[in-house]
Image 1 (cartoon, rainbow, N blue to C red):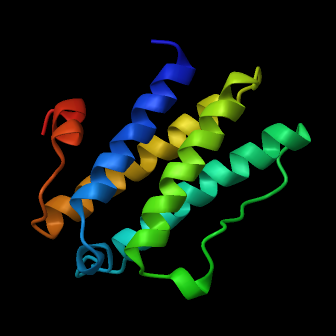
Image 2: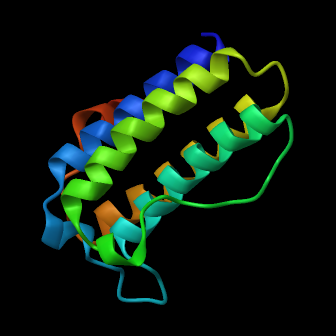
Length: 136
């Protein structure tokens, strides 16, 4: 599968996850030093948005996320940002001939591994797409 298609597939998995979680579940964290599920998804959004800015600038310009402190822990702004960032990152990936696509894909997959640990550790339902992709 071409990397751009793989990225689109990975993005769709996050939509499945976001749709399966309520706001209270997104605010959960593990009983060891960790952040919340919401914070993990915030980083996914920020990674995508930062990637788009890098493609537009032709170089890495740093990490930033449009989800501000006023939205922290809120489900709806996060779900919307996941959808918007997936769309813009998919468009940017088509025009990226560099290694940026690989770095973005690695970032997406890294968070999937972390989030699987959260879902299992918190006894939350794992979306079917995640179960199938990772043979859970």
